Image (cartoon, rainbow, N blue to C red; front, side):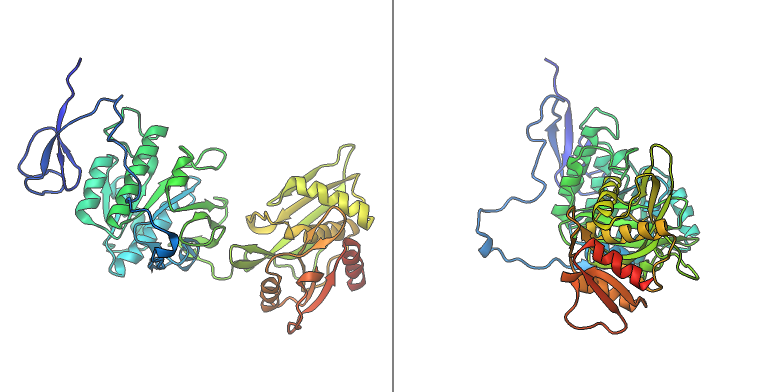
Length: 455
């Protein structure tokens, strides 16, 4: 049997040395190297440890539940999706298409935190320090004091984290990091899982907030094992078209805040800037109302936003097409059937195209009524009234169901100058909203009748 290799492990930072030294080469601590036998690849015991500290069994009522202290990043939109800011010991995973702005946003956030007195570290595995410095100058971050480490070895990164004890560290990216304990290549499932587990364990033990940048696959999902998303506290997705200047950061998972929150950014010459009024992005600027356009109020996390739904109905061939961008294609087919059966609007021989302006994706059924009104408007060639909006879920029986938090949607639209609304009866407020005329409906045919009267 082959003899296992002897290494020397630092009891302070966990750094490994092939020979005994008086001073640890990683953290410079004296007399901390302890002889250890490196385990073979087949030996896995003692290699795993819990991601969080173990504790005695106790009841929930006896646990002192305190709110986690948050540190704002200096970017209001990023703080929104994080739930208020970074959390001590929290682990954040952010993914997105190449070139969408992940590294840019994180570098800006680190610089803002550094200027506010926080100790920051940017670990880059894909670029050199000179490349990061060049991007920093392009972003106008002159004389930035953010510390940069170009390294992909997990053990060296952990030793640096232990020595520096930063408040926040960014690992860009987790797919480039590798551990000497494994023989597989960086980016493999085993390496990504093991490195993420070690970094998460280090964050929980030391209180360092760690942000992991993740690659995405061709399908747009985070590359690597799905357990990666289970390990971390927060998962953020960067969305948007690289040909557009607008970007969305969406929270898919957040143990310290609400999920499905979004932050809206605009890409400028000086990096990403937060957009305080995102409704302006998703509303087209028409001098006069045009056929096939209907505004709806969608809910993204805690934020109501106005989005313009556009529809184009044109004569089709033997097999009419149904195409939707930003909306569920199968739901579009269902709404066309309801529109025909309960409102007498037939589109069997027509091509129907539906689009949510601005590249936003709407998944909630509250868009149903606006989609149907936009289709009807395009088919008849008559625009909806100026200042008009609608929202509500439509069922197969033709009923219009209420949307959650309807009062907030109505107030947001009124604040932006909209004056006429068609909404579900259950969402009609008991007290009138100044400047807003509300038509409450229970059926699709009622909504169509009101629109004909208004037109």
